[in-house]
Structure formats: structure tokens, C-alpha cells
Image (tube, rainbow, N blue to C red; front, side, top):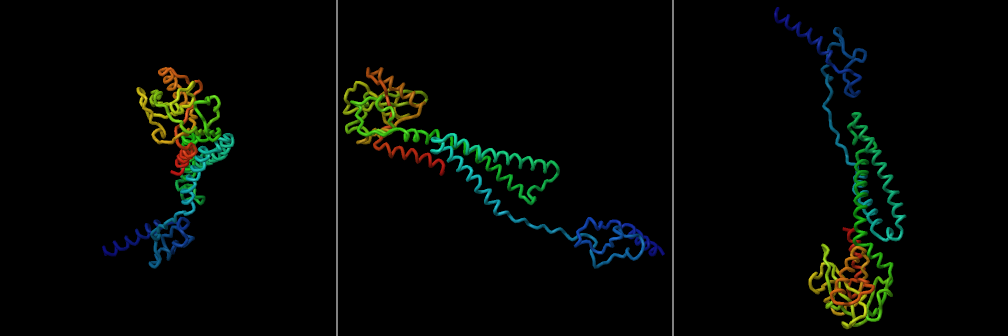
Length: 328
């Protein structure tokens, strides 16, 4: 009797509990909504519906994770777009267009930078709003918001770095070459008969045969760096005014005449590439004034050159440095 009582009690409890733990049909996918009568989503306590069909499972099948494929097009754009932005802006701010048309350079820069910045801010705001509202799966959206955000941010970083890099390359390597190219070239210049005032627009100069450096009057002026100067003469002749000077930095001593700048030790060098840097030119002028005062000579209108055997080749070498900055 007790066994029959326990069995009946178990059936009664199961009849009360099991139907009520079934999932609601409207919360289950249609393909797994097995054996539940739509008119009684929670089952009923009595009747034929209380019998569970053993061939149809009560719970949902295990979730199967479907691996997402990488968006190849977005990955390619993310790889090359920042690189193209960097190369384009760095080249724009390094090369001749900036020198010849600075207004156009600024216009192109703003035309690229302003829309890029506004679009990045807008996408950042949309992403922040989505996350703040609880929509965390930004990467799962149909418009590939995560890829878009990544590409825009990296392009902005590349844009800023290109401005800094291009400006530095222009000031250190390219501007001097453009200034020299804008000046004139002279050949057969005789330091003994010509004055610096006659060659104010000289950029590249080739001196007459016999021109050389007079190291007796070499001098160095120290101001963190040592600014070295030596007059260009013909056969070490005494000149009324020493207006042509070979110069260099950190290639001599500031207490004795030991000029070692440029191609001073190469026989046959008689060319000069004009020094156009304003800051360096002021210190070279001070070094010349020191030499003139120490040796009782005159330098009425001194011009400063990099001593070389081929001014055109020297200029091309300096220009290649600027291009190597971009390519490297």
C-alpha cells in the first residue's frame, strides 16, 4: 500500500511541476518548438496533453557557434588606406608643390583632413552611443562599424604623422635644394677679381682653375656646434676683399686653423654649393668676422659655399636624402 501511495504522489508532483517548466513557444525557435500545443503553452494539469511524447525533446538542442569569416576587402582597405594617406600628405608637405604653391598645399591638406576628422568624430559618437545604450556587438552590425572605425582612426593617426614628418623633411632636406634651384649658376668665377655683391643670386658656382682654400685664414666659431670657415682664393694670392668662403659644421677646431670640411682634401675641387640656411649663415658670418679681425683682412660681402668638386652632383645627393626619407 505504501508503495502505491508513493508512486501516486510522484505522478501527481510530476504532473504539477514538469508542465510548468516547459519553455514558452513564442520564446523558442520554430525549428525546435517540439510537441507543445499552441493553445496551451504551459500545458494543462489534466488530460491527454500531460503525456510527454518521448520521441520529441523537451529542451532546445545545444547551440552551435558559427565562425565568422574575415572581411577580406575591409582588411585590405585597413592595410593600405593609412599608408596611402601618410605617403600622400608627407609627399605634399615635403616636395616642390609646397615650395611653389603653399596656398594650394594648404587647400589640399584641409580638403583631406577636415572631412576625415569630421567623419571619424561622427563614427566615434555613434559607437559610443551604441555601447552606452547596451548595444555591445558593434562588430556584428551589417555596416561593419568596427572596421570602419579602425580604418578612420588609423587614417587620422597617419595624417597627423605625415604632417610632422613632411614638415621636418622639408625644412631639413628639401627647402635648401629648392632655394638653390631658384638661384642662378655661375662658371669661371674668379675670387681675385669678382666681389660677393656681384653674385648675390648665385646658387651653384664653379671657380676658375687654380682656385683653392687658403687655410691660413681658416677659423671656427663655437655655439654648441662649431661653425667652420676658410676663404676661397686663387693661388693663395692676397685679396683686397675675401668674399667667397667655404664653410661647414663640426669639421674644424675653434682654436686653430684646421679646416676639414667638404672635399678640402680632394685635388681639383673648385665648385661651391650655396649655403641658404638663415640660422647657419649668421654664425658663419660671425666666424668670418673673427678671422678678419684676427688676421687683419677684409670681407665686405661674404658668400658661403659648401666646397665640392661638382655642385650639381652635390645638390642631387642632398635631394636624394629627402626622397629616401619618404621611401624609408
